[in-house]
Structure formats: structure tokens, C-alpha cells
Image (cartoon, rainbow, N blue to C red; front, side, top):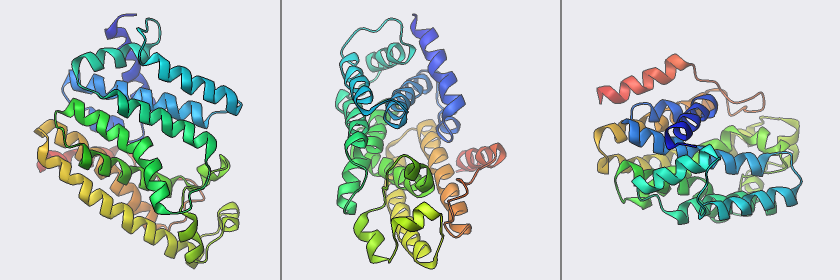
Length: 273
């Protein structure tokens, strides 16, 4: 399979399945856009395996196979072909890609997190690693802020996806914080947005916003188009969190949907800046 054909496939996947990512990367030059799409497709593959319907042992085997595939010379897997080509063009660190796989494996073994420190380590694997991979393409070595921004977006995902994660048998809200606000997993199971729930989620939201504010310091080290890319998907995530807050953190009827027009307006706001 040629690299052009492989890139076309990962870009198609990104347009189809990335709820927020696609609007950011569309402003990038072609070579950077294709490389970021390859990173997204890799992260999507890890998620699909970890969250899919296969037996746990089969999931583990496929994730371990993906680990080995990073060192191979793939020919027929579009995602791996595109990613291999992107890694030849940009210094995408293998350790970040391996961290993503480690996060997928962690999802097979751990469904609860006692404290935020525990959760933060997981978020660094599954989202901070995406940030580190992407900044290698953007052209900066500010990996610390890239990790911070990745964790911020993952924290917003956790708030948004509480019912979806529950159906997978997972609760990513720190157990000590759930208890300290008087919440229970019974509230999640029943989909009850109680006063206790809103207080707990307000706390989660404030922390996510603090991480987002810090992580956006990354923009200072980026060229104009890369900064526009990052500010676009960060703005989309912020708008999603705004909608969740406006609904009183009642996420149990499904995540809020931002229209294509709203997302394009966010791109326009970035252009004006």
C-alpha cells in the first residue's frame, strides 16, 4: 500500500469519527495534517480495541500485537503505513505511542481510581501521550505543556462520557472525591443529577478548566497554523464543557452536540486572534 493511499484512509477515518479533532487539523498544511490524522487513527485503534466487545484476553493480545507492529514494516494496514511514514518525516516518539497502548491495557485491568493522582497517571498515558506525539509534528519540544493540555481534554471527556463509561463498567471519577461530595455509583447507575452530583461535577469542571488554561500556554511556542489547530479543538472542548455546565451536569441523556456551524465559528474566532 502506498503512503498516499494510507494517508487518504486515515484522513477519511478522522473526518468520520473524530468529533473535535478534524476541525482543528483541517487548518494545517498537508504534510502536518496527514501526520496528525495518522496519530489520531492509531489512538482510535487502541480505543476501539480496549472498548470493544472482544473477550479481555483477545483485547490484550491485539494491543500487544500493536506494540510489536510499531517496530515492523507494515504493508497492508493503512493506519500503520501512514504512521510509519509520519514517523520518518517527524520525530514522533515511540515512547508516547507505547504509552497509549499501555493506557489501553490499563483499561483492561483497572476500572476505578482511588485518587486524582491515580487518575492523572492514566490520563497522561491515554491523552498526554497524544499531545506529546502531536507537538513533534507541530514543531515544538514543549512536551510538558502538551501533556497538560492532553490531560485537560481527557478530563473533559471523563465529565462528558460518565454514562458511556459506566456501561463499559468503568468509573473515572476519583473514588475519594465521589465519596467526599456524598455521591455514589448508584447515582450514576440511575442517572440522577442530584445537588451532590452537581457539586462534585462542578469541582471536576473547575479542575479541567485549570488544566486547560495552563495547557494553552503551549500556543506561545507554535507557528500560526499549528496554534490555530490547537486553539480550535481546545475551543471546541471548552464549548462542550460550557454546554454541560448549562445543563446542570446532567450528562445522562447523552453528551451535548455542537453543530458544525458552532465549530466553524470557533475556527473563525481563532483566525481573528
